[in-house]
Amino acid sequence: MAENKGVITVVGRKKICMAHSGDASLPAIVKMAWGDGGVDENGLPKLATGNEIGLYNELLKKDIESHVYANEEKTTCRYTATLERGELTGKEISEMGLFDEDGELIAYRSFMRKGKDEDIPQIYDMDEIF
Image 1: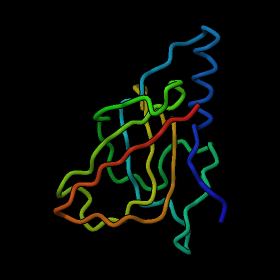
Image 2: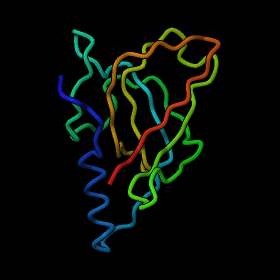
Image 3: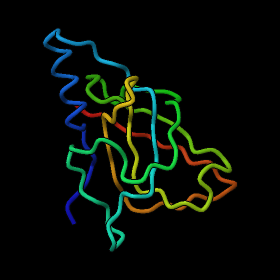
Image 4: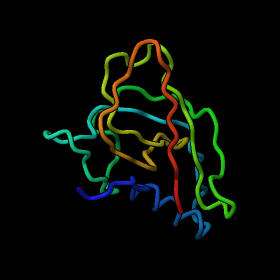
């Protein structure tokens, strides 16, 4: 199986390029979303292509709780959000994404199914790597 670390989407790369050229401002990443459409019929994670414009089957979108720079060079930003007790109970999460202030998907990742219990929160980190 090919390793799948997720991608910055084409939309995200376009926004970065336009911001660097001075032709646009870069909207902040403000939301994380989770879904259950990130695996194929065999239960293997779908390969992220960068052409994703949304999750395959979005279940919930929430505000980002915090972010940190994950390395000294500040070339990786780690965003954190939590699925609280009672949220998505019984669902099998297999994809997540980061959305900007414009509501557009900037980064996408698929992964093996992770079951969500009713009484246990799940904290998710997603890195945007440059």
